[in-house]
Amino acid sequence: MKKLVCHLILPCLLTLSGCSTAPQKQAADADPVKPETVKTAELPAKPFAADSLYDLLVADIALNRSQFELALEKYLVQAHQTRDPGVIQLAARVADYVRDNSASLETALLWIDVAPEDPKAHRAALQAYAIQGDAINALLHASWLYAQEADLDAFLAVTSIQMTDTQTKELIAAYQSLNLSAERQPFVMLARAILYRSIAELEIAEQTVTEFLQLQPDNQPGVLLLAQLMHQQDRIDEAATLIGDALQRHPEDRKLRLQYARLLTITDLQQAIIEFEALRVEDPADQEINFLLALLLHNQGQSDRAMGLFAQASQRPSLSADSQFHMGSITEGRGNITSAIKHYSQVRFGRNYLPAVSRLTVLINQQYGLSAARQNLQRLRAEQPEQAVTLFQIESNLLVSLQMPESALSILSDGLNSFPNDSQLLYARSMVAERQDNFALAEQDLRALIDQDENNASALNALGYSMVVHTDRQDEAYRLIKRAYLLNPGDPAIIDSMGWVLYKLGELAEALKYLQKALALLPDPEIAAHLGEVQWVMGDSDAALKTWQQGLQQAPGYQAIIEAMDRLGATQ
Image (tube, rainbow, N blue to C red):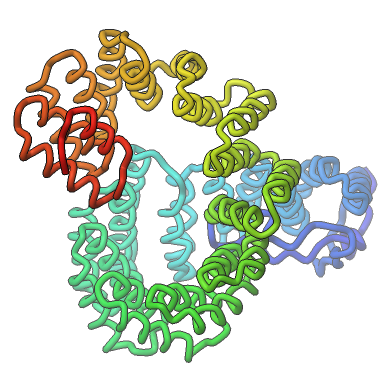
């Protein structure tokens, strides 16, 4: 076939920069493969067959039109036919961009076949295998990069691939079998220690990293890992001493100081503040440090400084929601409801989203009335339908707190119309119905939950306890509570239910054992009401009065205790 010479394969081939050494970095993090970012590839003159040039032209046009699948198809074919490194790299780049993991691995292996000494090719293979969760094959390329390029980050990054415990043990053995130079071999121990920690074999992990530190005594990752292992085993003082000693030898090491400061938040808050202040002096724009320091200062009552630091930290998108939540809490505590509403309204995601909405709802009701609070929740449900179930519950909680249980039942029913058989809404409605003495509705919802999951211990216990309170079906109630207890024998609420149903069945001695155990696990006035009644009926009036008094100290005027004492003729 006639050959054509193409000095620059195509006018818009990309200049490629290779793959990241971090195996779990997503391809989308790379520079986008888009027409406006295309640059001419500086490649040596090389002849291409007419059919290859045609396919490359089609691929190039498809790339400019954002038809990435077609572009990838053509580049892949020509990568194999031409075996040209530039074409292979471009195919790899497009495969990464469209997240075609199979094509990424295919191009990476072809790249290595064509250029076995190119580190970029091995990094591409490492990333492709890591994305597929194939740690053993990823290690082959990571170890090559370590041996040839001294790339320790790539060597250790394999340990972060998500694996089962069995796969992790296989990877530990694979690391152990590597044949590295004497200079590089110690870091095999560090990798193995990281992996042992990931499968909770903490003692072996500690022993392994300790052996590593005997060879590399000032290795920062090793010191940090050992401190983390000590922390996990509740040896906080040892961990702090270890990091503190390392910090004396390397006072400029920011990672060591940060870890030291974090440990001190458990053992010495004032010293922790000093360490975080030092970190902030080094870099006032480090918003993570500003946020952590603000938390400590807020905890110590220094809300003015905390507010300023939270405001700075909120400039970082990942810290904005949490910072706004804490600023809302501070301003609410100062009685500045308008400002608190403003801050809570800025919390639109994250772990504090629902607590923020709960406080926001209460404050809007307080400041602008119930209608405004409910309208805001309705708006939030429309804007964030994935949170709608919980937002229905927040509205129900507000209505219950305002002594509007019928409205609470109505809004929960609306929620169930939108989300039929949702377990959270069924349970919430059953609890409101039970407090309204509407046992029929409570039983209906709890049985629906049990039909969904026959091992739902909370639903079994709630239904059994409600039967004890509202019906004379004590034997059936006992069977339900017994099932819940067998499923979750450590739950003090279930233990309390066991004691109470046994009391109702006349098994006083057994009831006493369960109720004493429940109160020991959870000092709660409801449990105290039950235990005190059993003690009183068994003739131990002194113990009963003491139990009730303890419950009333915890919750003065608690109705269940007062009612029990009045009914039994006990005097305070």
